[in-house]
Amino acid sequence: MSAAQAALEAKLPTATLSLAEDLFGILGILDGNPGLLRALTDPAREGKDKAALVSQLLAGKVSADAVAIVADLASARWGSARDIVDALETLAASVAIAVAENQGLGPAGLEALEEDLFRFNRVVGSNHELQRALDDSRAPAKARSALALKVVPGIGAVARLLVTQAVAAPRGLKPMALVQRFLELVAKRQQRWIAQVSVTRPLTAEQSHRLQAGLDNLYGRKLKINVTVDPTLVGGVRVAVGDEVVDATAATRLAELRRRLAG
Image (cartoon, rainbow, N blue to C red):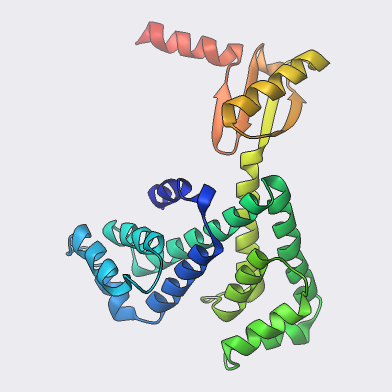
């Protein structure tokens, strides 16, 4: 999963909503075809053969990027058939979320998407009759999706896609629970735009300006910087942006020196 997400990251700056739609569509095909899913996760088959099967089945039906993403998933080894489709759902949602990020030029797009999804969960969560209607698997997926969009008019295109997916194909979850999972992915994406900075003493205006400029230049985007004062750092600065941590504190440098001397 980590390898798939890392490979996807390179595609996200130019991703389109149609790619997310293609991936969700393939997810529906795999969920509805256990035999095909077993073939794509059979540990006895070579990865290249499984990737070739994906290409044979999907070429010309969806975008080349979608075929490549699913072929890469199929070529890897998975613990269970459920794992690969869960991964595909996450990748599809990640593409959609990146589209909102790109359209909003960063955090503004993510915040707008987050508010749309929160709005859906607030409306549905306050109406038990509506919850039952959206949870009713006997009702056509198209009708449930139309009802879901009707109760949250005016939401953006990305939110419409994610809400529709959550209602039409919740995959064993309640629609609200799947929307919450999508919200968690949005929150994780937002962390790319927030630098958590720990320093030993408050920064001056000039230091704050230099820090902002340096981090914006390093990460190639305008970051929101949250600064906290932590005297236990014993000098230096610690910066966390998403999963990446730059630790230039005195304590860390001393610990590294000790390791080198001991080693």
